[in-house]
Image (cartoon, rainbow, N blue to C red; front, top):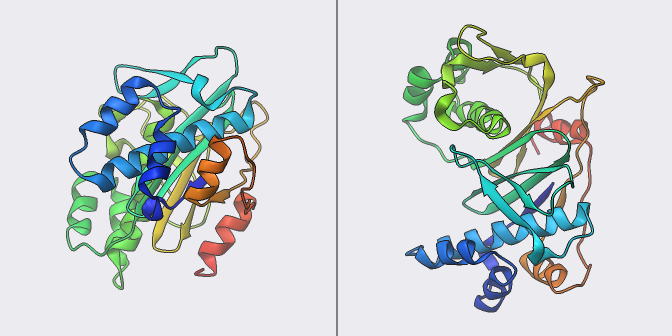
Amino acid sequence: MLLCDPRDATDDEVAAALAPLQSTERERAARFRFAHLRRDYAVAHALVRVALSREAPVAHGSWTYRTNSHGHPTIDCPAGTGLRFSLSHTEGLVGVATASELEVGFDCERTTSDPETLALAESHFAPTEASAVREELADPSDAFFRFWTLKEAYIKARGLGLELPLDGFWFEPRGDRPKLRIDANRIKDDGHRWASLRWRDGDHALAVVAERGGTGAELQVSVARLTVRELVMELRGGRNARDVRHAWASAGNRERDGE
């Protein structure tokens, strides 16, 4: 997984991030009315290409994608890499998770305090999740985003968008690796085939949901954080990134310790 804070990107760095993107991506970036949205889009989509090219010997500009009817992106070219990816961006953070031969979903959210989060949980979450948010008297918004990121990550991993009812699946309230539970009458899936992890990074909540694979073992993920400058250097052929790697368990420990 790669993470990057896009907020200090210069105009030249945004232009460099846009350079390897497909023409359709550059056209979409140009349609954003506000410069900070164009910046975040450019950095996020360049980050995808860097993440994929770290996993396969493919030039950053050679990746092309296709989307299904729900807007879920998959790799179109080159074929046969077996790679999957999931992109998310929020204020102050963009990130991409990759996996080989396994579906993966990733979500990150800035955890701002919002009095509406409890009402949203009550109306859209499964009862156990809504109850957990309600019981978080000190900061229900924080509890809300812990569940929201997990639910978004699962939806992204499935690639079915809002076809999946938000209250038709739920995550156990406690722990860094909460178990996924599914209402089999509403969603055709088996919660046991998915592994999950949630953690905090500053004022952001992050979550990954991925297939366990044939062995059913817990998956491991490493996280590398890049500055925009390092991202651009890698796009231009340099490798001066300062990797900050940790296992899923380590990420979970950071959340438990309140870091």
